[in-house]
Length: 164
Image (cartoon, rainbow, N blue to C red; front, side, top):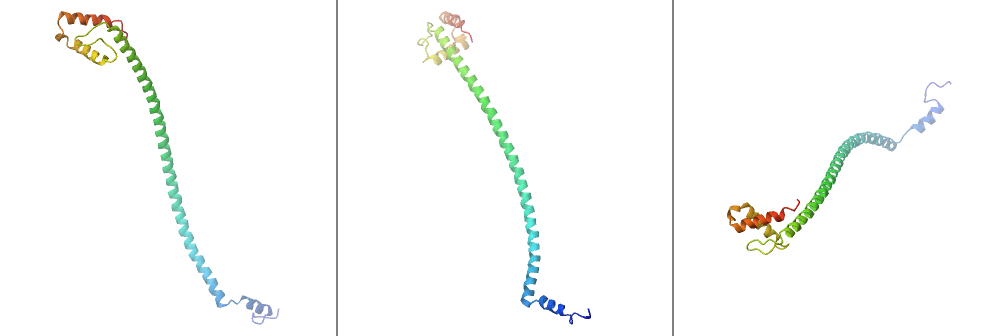
């Protein structure tokens, strides 16, 4: 209680001795303090980079969502097209079957009718026979002879029973 300065206080001297730092210890503290300042700048820079990366990731995620949407739409369109193609294939098969039936009916109906310069109709000469018939009907003016007129009338009678 009687001591008025720190220098005379026995407790203060021991605390002062403990509080004295060597030059090396002071240098270490200064380095830590400056490192803290540098780390603060690094932290700010890292925060900025993280922010940029988050923005980039958000943009990439948005792009990925757009791509997924486009892919889903394209897959849906592809399925629709495939279904339409199946329907068209079934229609084509049906039409080909009907054409085959008509061809057989025509061959059967015209089996006894001999066209000039042709063998009787059969599956092998069917196309040539139909081409000749088409020519005869579209160019009837060239086939004005009584024989050809009778032949065309016989063909008309033969194909009347065929239902299309």
